[in-house]
Image 1 (cartoon, rainbow, N blue to C red):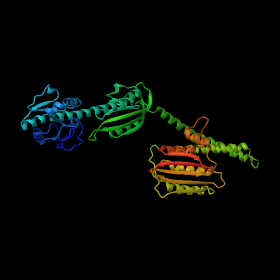
Image 2 (tube, rainbow, N blue to C red; image 1 turned 30 degrees about the vertical axis):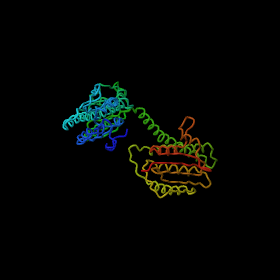
Image 3 (cartoon, rainbow, N blue to C red; image 1 turned 180 degrees about the vertical axis):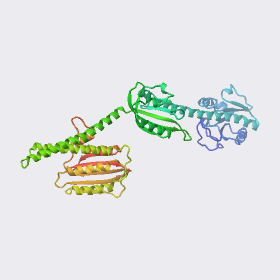
Image 4 (spheres, rainbow, N blue to C red; image 1 turned 90 degrees about the horizontal axis):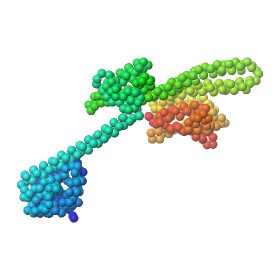
Length: 487
């Protein structure tokens, strides 16, 4: 059936449960005087749409009124619509004229109004139903929102409970910021369960816990600031462990700190490894170097003892091995100094200017080597700790190990969106495949790198999330490619 042409234009009102600002009344009535009078009366307060199209019953409205004839025709559809809208009250009204109606109409409608009816009475009864409808719709919306909120909270709580790090929540008020919540990982890490709720985390401190670290924590908490420390803690059974502790203040809508969230992770293995590396670095850069200097000194004495006689080949091998080991200790120390920037704010570097100065210095140091720098007129500002040391290492290796009759090193500098690409190409003998494979796949007892310089470059670039690759140049030589983010 074609909708009544007197009906207002179709709009796209919101779904049931989200009523419009102005309620919508659907008059499912045959054309005639009754429909005109009802339309005129209700239009003073509502959007009124007239129709006899059964499909319109599927669309949104806040109240539907039938005359007797249309009600007989669509009663089954009305019941289906009421079942669909059961979650939100949707009123249907029968306007009963002089005709009798068979059956029990109250099974299908929420009110029966006898015609003719006073305007005030019609307004009052329809208004009551519409308000019930709109109140039910608002409650349904709030219920959905509440259900979603509860589901979100349950998801977040489950995420916290099952997180792979310890999580605690402490009260800002009260003596010593008592704990209000601990998750499962915190209990696994410390051995403390619900018995620590209401107490504070000082229970984790012990005889060897640094007082300087605890003072840092207390100062940050008192100042309502975030803080991160490595602290030696003790579990419930007395086991010592290194705890990576991060504390963050939580604020309410006014910005007032109300709680503190704590995050704990066992970093004992990492701390032991750090200490082991410190000791090995000291032995390598200090003790080993001192011993090699002694060997180097005695080798010089041994060379002098031969005077004008031919120096045995064994002495020359000793000298070469000694020089290599001393150079190795120097490289280890350089790597340590370059990468130890945990608490240092790196300066911004104009890479193009720095490389130009570096090339000038190498041209004096290696007069037989041709250095060529190619770049465009762009900004090359970077903030990458140790980058110039890495580039210097690459250029020095390219020149030092180049046995070509006409040694040459080409440096290309280019800007690519948010990246700066540095390419260094030489025409030397190339880097052994073993060194390149180790860089790609890691070291093994059988395959390891003899040149730590290439690892220095790799570590500097990788620490900033950059890219580093090594490949063969044509016809001979090596291509080093470094990509780092702009400032």
